[in-house]
Image 1 (cartoon, rainbow, N blue to C red):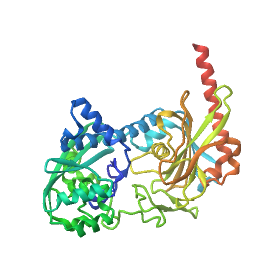
Image 2 (cartoon, rainbow, N blue to C red):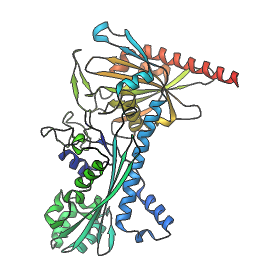
Image 3 (cartoon, one colour):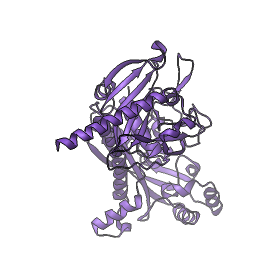
Image 4 (cartoon, rainbow, N blue to C red):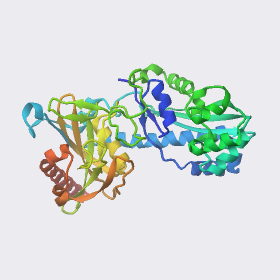
Length: 449
């Protein structure tokens, strides 16, 4: 299996550059407050933010993006490392639905699955940021038409520099590398009509320097000195050099063939336009007669809230799935397809944070249940809020219509996704059993003190 690469950006041009180079990355948006990063940098240097050179800005921002995403994955690894309880395995195609065919500890399950918690190298996280300088002035994204118009008039017939910062983090070792690429871009003479037509496309409003090389703006670029991919937002030669300096062959990241290097999600034509095709996305034709989502299987976190005095489970956090998603319109545990290089537990923790704001630091994993169909399986992870922690559900992406805490007694009134519907009564028993065990442990710990 290829070494996973995580792109700390939702930028389609950066994503497409990697697709074209044979790499389907995991996409994880950092949500970094870029302005706050630069203001903090200026405060520490005791200078005006505008005085900070572009190459220093892009280096700081790329690092902030990579570190933020790396920290979220470290939280997933830590939660998996501290998982307790046991995993039950059901093999309904062999033994009939609901029959438990095996039981193993959560840690034995993690060790056998070769996920992020056990590998010696990777996954690799890359963060990038780009800025454009012209006549000594640094330009980011204009955001509005007036700024874009002014900048394009200034750029007409001139040469500027596109700077792109890169930060690479190996999650296994913690090693962190930094590099900044630069390319000189020369523009042709732009007429007023050219500028107005270009602005009308909307393209220059949300890109560094108010132009793109891979879009409408390409016609207005006379020449480039340097790496063209760096102008687009991620220098492939720079990234390859960084990766190889870690002793990793670039070809170890290839996970696409020439035939499937598509920047869209071909498995669901009604998905939102910007929906991302992630490693592990795809359908499995199962012997049970159904198609299942997730080439490596799928998983989700069934998070419960309990009364710490009585041990009674009071609520569970459920996701109302987007209509375009697999079994859209149903309610289920926040989750999704397991990505390449992940264990089902890690995939469930990652997906539940991205989709429902369930942060791994706020929960305790207490067991799981695998419905194993052979080439495909669905893992339900049982978890509870940590004492003193409160999970505030929020739909963080477009895969949810809504997410929220549902009283346990009311769940039967909801249309549930198949893996949850099939085993709901048993899951309730399991949650109550785990909660009683947790209460007994609390009592024993208090008595020892």
